[in-house]
Length: 352
Image 1 (tube, rainbow, N blue to C red):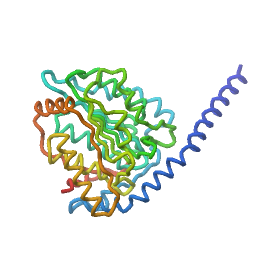
Image 2: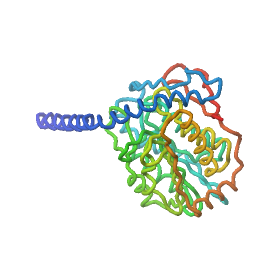
Image 3: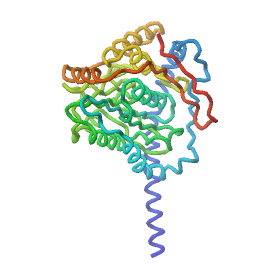
Image 4: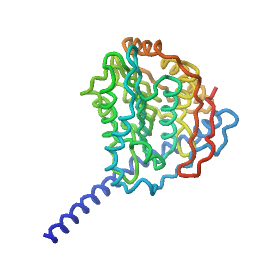
């Protein structure tokens, strides 16, 4: 019996090793694409930093410490803890406010190797909580070594659980879900999901569409900040869905990388557009103009952010806007570098 258990344990360990090995061998295409993208946008990252208002210094940039933190346990323990972390996070969701259209937000930061995506997800949580009356209605999923004990990780499975949890609290006819995803994107239209050494599934357009198949969520705004993200539009668009992407299906977007605190799209749409305006369509219109100006000045091929919309979802968004009293602008902030002693959070004012 003991020998049989030893043999079984060895077989399971060998199988897991094969799985991880296969995953690692599959990664070079993604890694090569990401490195190529980063090299191609290094000038854009510098231009993005230069666009920040005076007062933002280089120390505010991403240090991207990607080592596994001791307080998070082993990768296996982290995966085992996800059910409880999600249960705790969804339990903190507040009930909907009756008598008006409620907005719920899910933010998803897919790539754990660059803090820029974490920064955007955390900022979206702050922006919608403080400015757009979404207190208690925001769920955040992040792949980043610095947040493993704070937020559930960003996986497709966790995202499905988050969507289902929000759906249980929403009025399917009245309320709106804003789903924000930020990561790298491939020419084959997949969102990069990575938290080494975990073998995580990538996200294709049909994967996002399938999230809502068995839910009562009807009104959605899906915002995707990634290269080639326009390739997600056809799978997601509909009369009650607004889709906003950082780029055309065949274009890159700019501003990611280890030296960037926020992507160009994130700065233009969230940090500037939604602080200068109090509606999503107006924020997108301003963001598209800003990005076009920035890319023209930098001599870059235009990313051409996209929007697919329809009257029914715009009517729901107007009903939501009519029911809130927007707060003051919320400056974009870069949180301290991972696991360093707490220091003052530096503020980067929105580009103008």
